[in-house]
Amino acid sequence: MAKVSDRIVRLAVFAVFIVGAIVFLSQSSSPAGKYTRQSTTGASSSSSSSSSAQSVLDKDLAPSSLQSNSKLPFDIPDYLDPNYKRENATFISLARNEDLWELVDAIRSVEDRFNSKYKYDWVFLNDQPFNEEFKTVMTSLISGNVKYGVIPKKHWSLPPWIDEKKAAQTRERMKNIIYGDSVSYRHMCRFESGFFFQHELMQDYKYYWRVEPSTKLHCDVNFDVFKFMREENKDYAFTISIHEFEITIETLWETTKEFIQQNPQYLDKNNFMDFISNDGGETYNLCHFWTNFEVANMDLWRSEAYQKYFEYLDQAGGFFYERWGDAPVHSIAAALFIPKERVHYFEEIGYYHGPYNNCPIDDEIRIKNKCMCKPKDDFTWQDYSCTRRYYDVLGLQKPLGWEQHTG
Ligand SMILES: Nc1nc2c(ncn2[C@@H]2O[C@H](COP(=O)(O)OP(=O)(O)O)[C@@H](O)[C@H]2O)c(=O)[nH]1
Ligand SMILES: [Mg+2]
Image (tube, rainbow, N blue to C red; front, top):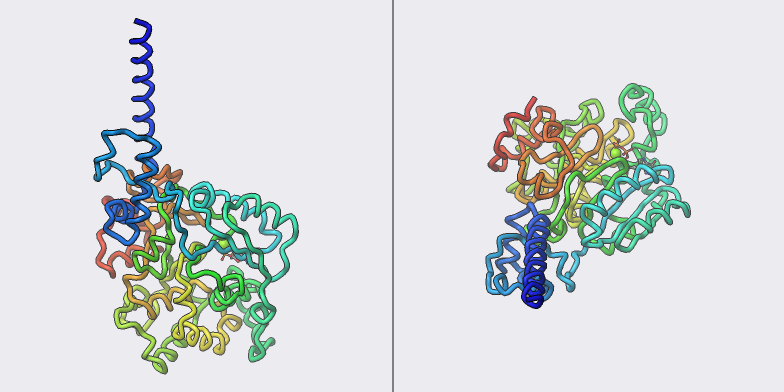
């Protein structure tokens, strides 16, 4: 009698374990469902890694009812594969020593939501050497290799062709707009536009994910963002898009048009001009991707087209005689030099950079990914965002109920 009840208890424990495991794995599923599911069925080149993920599942759980079932009711996260091969990619943060504590929260959030599973490297760059406190704290938080670099002086100073007096007059004229009177902000924008991908520490990598202080991920990211970029042929990805303050870029579009007139060969024939212009390229509609979050392929910035474009802009002097931002510069280049299908919006990566949020309005996405954001705070469908235009130009279907989030 005792033996029978022992067996019943053992069976009950086993059943609870199986149910628990299934609930756990189904909650960890990726919202980029199309992408992850594709790899679990072996339809893409990642079939070998997904089959090893299957074997991890088999070995650990060994439920005979699941072994022969190739169509599992949930996605298997690829980070469960012990032989998982990371992409050629890194995180990158430009920061000052005094940004440490604002950056700590942002990094902890990325580690908790994504990188503790995938363990990608992290590169920190600064115009001054990082101090020991900064390095000790960051290294303790990050699960991948961490590297600290100093920016070469020539990438963080007024180039010789810039008239210092004229630059100072600009700062005086623009002192009432945000960062209008700042020299260092202009160096930052120029560096992020034209030089970060040339830094020696970045030469080891192809893809990067930019992280800034005081930002936050609202949702778990249960798929390899970099693998997605490579396998889906994406070169540029964003979470928030927005209109630029016109006063900061008064001559950027005229300068861009001159460049294109002189170098028409760089314009991709399947470009995304209609995202950045409402009149076929005559004027700029101020739409840009918010570069404080940015996942991209550095081949785009290292290309001849972009190198020549940046050089042309830099010679024109608008980084100092106006306040050209890296966001409109990157966005215009991504819109003109690559096919539009290579620009991707990560709907499911909930993200915050003051004062805006990308918060998935789709309940299923938020629940699956343990999002901690209110859909009513989402910026995506509001008038000042450009993401509605992104959907329209690409002919994509908007999520159900988006009309309730406009205004
Ligand atoms: N090393 C260094 N980093 C800077 C400087 N100014 C801004 N940054 C970094 O550049 C990025 C953008 O700056 P931030 O103040 O967030 O600008 P905002 O997002 O446009 O308001 C952040 O990662 C900052 O840490 C600077 O003078 N030196
Ligand atoms: Mg910022």
